[in-house]
Length: 462
Image (tube, rainbow, N blue to C red):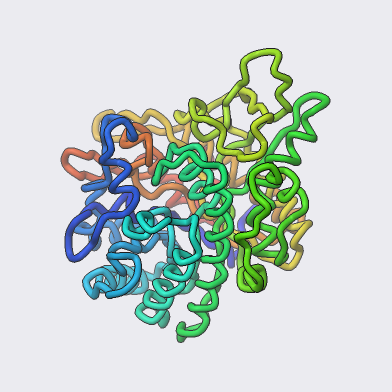
């Protein structure tokens, strides 16, 4: 089986994870600068101050992408580079960097896919309430307008948010991501204001963009496997929080009844103002889907210590406000270096379910990949496990396309090893290795395999 000629192969990164230059050319701190510099929050005290130094190595990294044959590159724009205080004055140097990036991609025949928010909220906005307050959504729309005016004649796909589930629940409920809050109500306020930011940003972009791009959002939608007699009840509760909380407002213009039920002891959602759901419910051209693993759930009966293998940070308190009685069970292996289970069928099931619920909406796998403990041997990285992971998930994509699901492309996560959030530099997801002490780039075997895949448009042997 071959991929359709229109199917796009790309790779993805995020600004704070690769750029470095944290205090250069007018950039001001984000919540991740603050969080990573707080002792005890990130493994080894790592920060994104230098990361992959992509800011200073832009041209060489663009040449690397061209050598791999990437058809598209999904990057994120750093809000604190563009509007350093979150609102107000625009930083021309920041816009110039992304203009050079977009021009460099186009000159190499690579489609620019710009994500406006991949978690680096300007710190002054967090100081004023962050995603718990409406004014942050409004500031995001202003920022989107600024970026749209600067790049809107060249960017081919605009993505508003990346994984708002992580921003809301890991940032405001479990506290394992920036800004590190542990407040159930705050996390639900963040859900709504992230949704609102998405809708307001789409409207702002459409008012200023001068070409005819695609508009999208990227969600890390969850695949829950029910366990035992209480599994389906548990599945409904966490699916309301993890999936419906975003799909309902964004794609259907409503707050799902299951979400209202599971959160009724925390909030009445009175912070949702008249007109908000209409503002959120804006048309999109493609839905970005990030997928890594599945979760196995049942209700906790209190008879034994609760298991907390939540699939993102097994040692964290639950990031599911209102569903604290749901138990996340250990998954059967094999596992990646993150401890996440490997289940390509989960991706197939997710894409199929989305297609059945939203049959006219094209899908894009905007992140999929795996961390493994790579080693360098004679200047090479033989990462057969990563090749097998990507190959099996791409086979799942092929299978659902053959069954009639409209999947338009696949972006491997990640182009390069990078700052892996609270794990610092201890987890390597890249198909290109980065030696952090020298910033040398080494194409892993998976990069060479992916290059052949793009050229042949069929899965090479592992």
